[in-house]
Length: 281
Image (cartoon, rainbow, N blue to C red):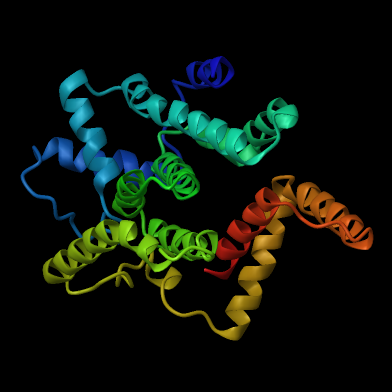
C-alpha cells in the first residue's frame, strides 16, 4: 500500500491525458461551469459513456476547490481499494506461500501502474470488477450488486465486464441448486443501465452507436475482417505491455502439467474460467 501511495504522490501533478482528458476533465468542467443544472451532456461531449465519473469529479472540485492535486486525491481511495481487492483475491485463491510474489506480479503490471498515475474512470472499472469478482467468490450478493452498479455507471466497457462476470458466476456456482439465483445480484446494475440508456435515448435519439464523428466509427458490429484485425491488435497489446511473457509462461506450465497427467486445482480452474469468460464476451 505504501509503494502505490508513493507512486501516486510522485505523479499527483500529472495532467489529464488521452481518454481522461475527455471523460474526466472536459466532462467535469462542463458540469462544474454550468452549475450542475443538467445531467444531459452537449453533443460535442457525449461519447455515450455514462457521465458519473466526470460529474463526481466536478462535485469534488466544488467542495474542495479545482486543482490537479485535488483531482488526483479524489482517485486515491480507488487505488487503495484496488490493492485491497487484489489482496483478498490472492489470499482467497492462492497458497499463502506465494502471496508476496503474486502481489508483486499483479502490482508490477505496466497498465495498472499507468492507471495509478491518472485521474481515470478506468480506476473505477478495475476496482468494481475486482470487488465484484471477490463478491462472487465469497458469496456476497449485496457487494456484487453495488460493484455491478459502479461498473455500468462510468463506462460502456462496464456492460461487457458485467456480462463476463455473469457468465463466471454461473460457472462458479454450477454445482449448486442456486446457480441461476446468482443472476439476481446482477439485476440492479442491469436495471440501472437500462434506465440510463433509455433516458439517454429520449434525450438524444440514440443509444450507444453515437452519430458523433469522434466516436461513431468505433461503434457497431465488426465484420469478419474487423474481428481478425481486433485479434491482431489484442496480440499486439500483449506484446507491447509485456503480457506476452506471462501468457507464454502459462502455456508452457499448463502443457507440462497436462503431459504429467496432473489435475488442475480449483483455484487455477477459476482463474482460467474468468479469463475465458472475458475473452468470449
